[in-house]
Length: 118
Image (tube, rainbow, N blue to C red; front, side, top):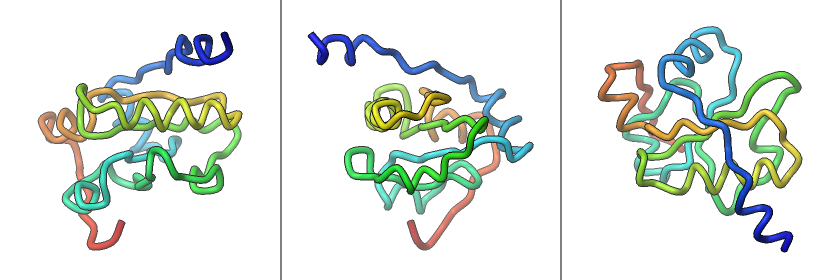
């Protein structure tokens, strides 16, 4: 029963334009659930690359009142949803999901950072 209840918990979604505004204001922690290789090719500015199944709570750098936004490649990628649900299971309350992922972000020509290290 508990497992079924956890599966029913949905993660609130955030749209690209709202996320862009939060990134510009510096009032969000963005978490990239893509592979390190994909992260290096391009990620949302300031995003922290996390292993969806293996990150620790400290890696989230969560601050009270600051939303955590998870994303991965795009709508067909389940890694961000899984990572977001893990954060909620760890007790984080302001968790959101950007389902469009880096594919939508780049399609909208929003700023992207590239990195040699994940």
